[in-house]
Length: 200
Image 1 (cartoon, rainbow, N blue to C red):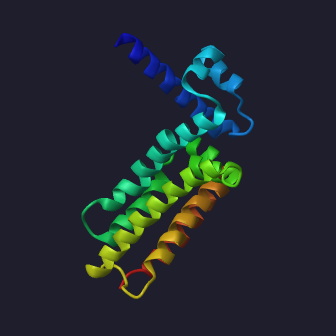
Image 2: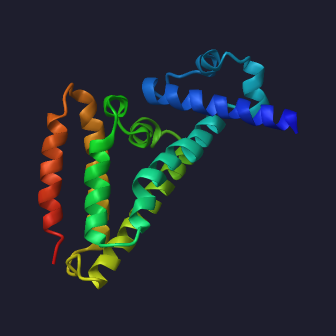
């Protein structure tokens, strides 16, 4: 039992350090050696848990990146209440709440998509699954809003969902180029104007 716990803690340490390095330095430039140096563990500890970097990368996507997107952007969409206000709160308030570290480094999922989305089918499928689940949750909320008359029932729910996700991910990438939040302020203003068009 004690050995199982130690093994699980070791695995979690590797995942955490790998995620941080992938986020800050990029996936392709982060070697197994750099990850294990950050953990202060031996390379043997790595190969005890993972066959290769690809396997670790998929685990980071599944356990770290997916959790961030689900906690911040998907689960809030299933809350009860006015559908329009939930969309407004999720997409406007979330962007304002990011600490400087997250603003500086962008969106982990977006970084992965841009760096390795076309590099390996397994990565592509893992990342696409997160985006599809996000899109489906958003479409379901928009459809509910139409029925409850808080969202214009003539709009295309899928088109709005794809647009909102794309705009959100896009500004996370652009923000990395700036030392201040003026571009975020412009994005928030533009998004506010767009969202008003969704009201009945």
